[in-house]
Image (tube, rainbow, N blue to C red; front, side, top):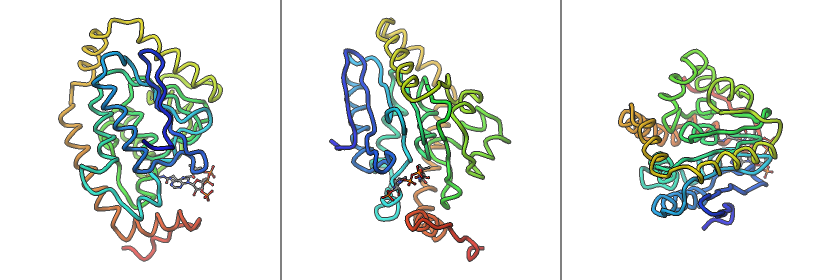
Length: 257
Ligand code: COA
């Protein structure tokens, strides 16, 4: 289990907290593996009724560890990141997210697979895939235009524009924007606990019905995006962009044509 993942059990509520503050909770392979294992175990454990996913009161996650992207890019469906994506995508019980501070890359796209999202007003969300020489992932190229319309999705996915927690709530990506990280976590926990009082099978059946339409198409898109993302990670454009981040400089794409 990763030292950067805190797992807490409180009755039927399982909380997964990403905890790597010195790197803004950037996700390592061990963190993905830990979150995947926790979700897989929670899926099989009848006594767990709901999962709360958070990064704490000041940072959700800065996304995939950029150094890992350069040194050990995920290879195929068996990689830790894909195992995590599958575990969340297939998770039949409700998932509640509490988001504060930066939520970058998969930190934003995973929210599209949660059931309830509470967010601090000044959270900073961003999907800088094109900016990193990459492409959208985790179904975002399909889900986001459906949710917010093509024009806004193009700003977010093609330009990699940053948006706030308040905007995420306005656009239907989050349920509610709250004043700060503490209020966000408290609200998310309170709403997660509501599931503990509901009829468990009725909740499962209802989530399954809500997620069913277009599900196989979405699974196919996630696979297609994943294959392209893996190829792009090894492209000269991505290597330039990722190296530039590590070297704290602006990437130079002028030589690509
Ligand atoms: N992978 C690896 N390290 C990361 C990281 C990531 N995704 N995000 C941040 N870090 C590291 C920084 O390199 C820095 O490390 P250092 O202190 O050893 O130099 C530390 O975390 C703090 O980050 P910093 O950029 O100084 O914090 P900030 O508050 O100015 O900005 C972010 C926070 C999240 C906006 C910014 O770090 C960022 O944009 N990160 C990259 C996000 C990204 O591109 N993710 C991949 C998406 S596919």
